[in-house]
Length: 224
Ligand code: DX5
Ligand code: ZN
Image 1 (cartoon, helix red, strand yellow):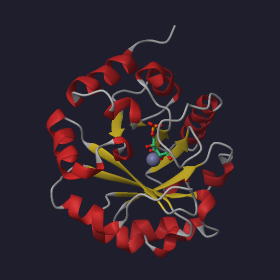
Image 2 (image 1 turned 90 degrees about the horizontal axis):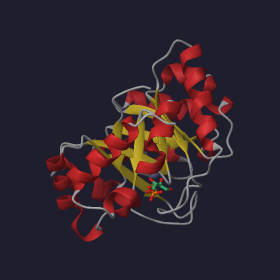
Image 3 (image 1 turned 90 degrees about the vertical axis):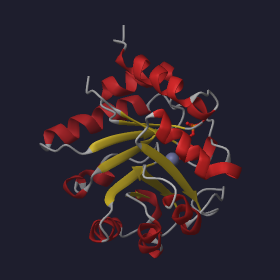
Image 4 (image 1 turned 45 degrees about the vertical axis):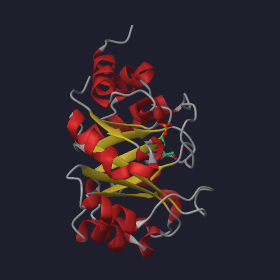
């Protein structure tokens, strides 16, 4: 089991009327990352937020901004998100026909490059790009909504990606997003996940410091 892992709470399930205060609360609880879901109403049915809001949050937080772009043709906005303060920019393999160019551009802008794969997208979509990637995001639900159930076959996909990364002698991080809970955290970390995103299973259970401890304790539990 790889330890420690990173818990990246998804702001999608936080209180949008007080986003700045939510970030401060995360920082005070001891968290280091915040997962920010950008939805464009095209790649996914929902619309959330964009660069101006991220920029204003950047002014009040020093958390690592893990920005998940569920945006069609993300290459149109990479510079805007970097200028807004994204530390990591994750684009979907399904959202652009020029994935390598988008990844190279994120790196050129000085952010950590990452690629997300929908549940049904094979790992071969990122294999040749692994040396350029800081992280691969395995979606464990179909993107677009919080509070969905984890899709079981994705656990094997995490294992397969972990083996692929090791086979190439790389240290690319594996992130999982969707339906992650303290109940499946141990299995995911055991399979090779380095970064667990959690929206509803995190924010609906304050206080955040306690919830964070629950996730870490659960992930350390040896699977039977
Ligand atoms: C879904 C988003 C997720 C979402 C996860 O499309 O990418 O980050 O917030 O929410 P939960 O943890 O509730 O499944
Ligand atoms: Zn996400």
